Length: 152
Image (cartoon, rainbow, N blue to C red; front, side, top):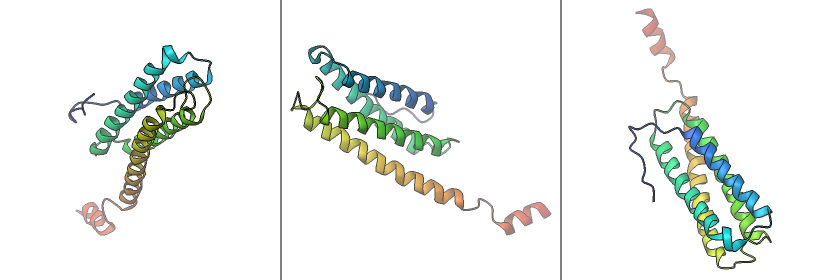
C-alpha cells in the first residue's frame, strides 16, 4: 500500500486527480462493454482498491497542505472525483454486465466497503470546503490595521 508522502515533497494534485478520473472512466467503459469477467474481474477490483487508496492519500496530503494556493479548487476536484468513483461503484453493484454484483454476489461487501470510504472522504472534504469559505470571508487585515499600516 502506498504511503502518505512527506509534505516537503511537491504533489501535483491536479495531474494526479486527472489520472484517477481517467482510470474511473476506463472502469465505467469496461462495465458497459461485454467484458469477460475471467480476464478482467480481478484487475478491475485491484484498480478499485488502488483508486480508493490513492484518493485516501491525496485527501490526507491535501488536508495537511495549508500552504497550497489552489487548495480549495483541489478540494472541489477531489469531491467530483469521489462522486464519479461512487457512481462507478453503484454501476458495479446495480449493473447487469459480466462484471457486476448481479453476476458475482460476493462483490457486494467489497463495494459497500469502498462506497463507505468514499462517502466518509466526501463528508470530510465538504466540511473542509465549508471551513475554507468561512476563513476566506474574514478579512486577513482589519480596516483599522490597514489604515495604521498605510499611514506609517
